[in-house]
Length: 455
Image (cartoon, rainbow, N blue to C red; front, side, top):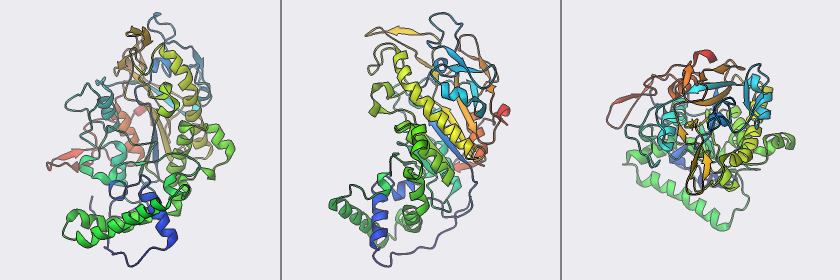
């Protein structure tokens, strides 16, 4: 892919008051110019497709969500009952009744599997398609390769309406890095609300305005004094483009949830998950390529910190079902509302929704110290994912696991296969190669094919 150099242009004078405030509010509100918005110099057309990923960080139990085994042994079967869905013969957890009513608008993958049972390394495998070369049992690993959103940001290039190509709600994945793609491909972190602070003057103080003015002055200084530096020359090339993003009316509208009716916002749920999913739909509809929502909400308390429901978790004493009983209704509401909304708006070919985590949970329930808490441990050998929209076949189950939910029994699916399906929707060739720091060509995926049953 060739980069066409943009015309370099110096600042010809002071910004007017409105432009200054809008640029400043975004620049220090979480959207770093060089780190997030440095897109490709080639202003070419982008495919009009988007992906929303609802990521169940920590690993949601497949046995308590989408692949219940009610007839298994007592220490292995789900702690919840299955309920019927709109699709004959397909059942899911009793705490997901709203999703059960829209089951004809999604497909379940019950045979997802890989080999990594460590949180960060498992997430890296799922989000990049490349298993880490050295596994870190402390779950502090960072990726050697960029994730799917970073790749989409790089290959999509600049959006004609200046929409950021990769947005993560409420913040980016902590285990993935853009590495050889460059820092500009990182996700823009967005907090849903009435109007994100990045696009609002609400609460702005005089000191805040001074900080924003100094930031803009620093950029001007970099351009004047750094002409000899390749990095600052690149910053100069992209400054005009970044400015367009920060001042774009389309960006402001997409982030403004007040554009939606109170009734619709209520349907999603007036909480981080619900409003985050609504924001994700608005961004995808406006042209953002990849929107990720990390489905853990520490501000709700330990029940929402993540889906790591194993015994001995200091944050989660007691029976893990008590946490699931609180968490799943919120999860049910936001996912079902998003699926309904996307289909009602006729966006189900443009937008693909994926609900997935880094792995599932062990088929056997375990009682562990120090408080005799009950839970399930990490289990990448078999787990589930939900896929909706994307012009794919809905209302079906892909694959199956054995009677105890331990291993796939047919139609096994890997994270690479799921990523290949996503890339196909985004019109990205998974065989496309980037050049790493050593000069070696690295394909987007070494292996993986789109899931045939969804085509």
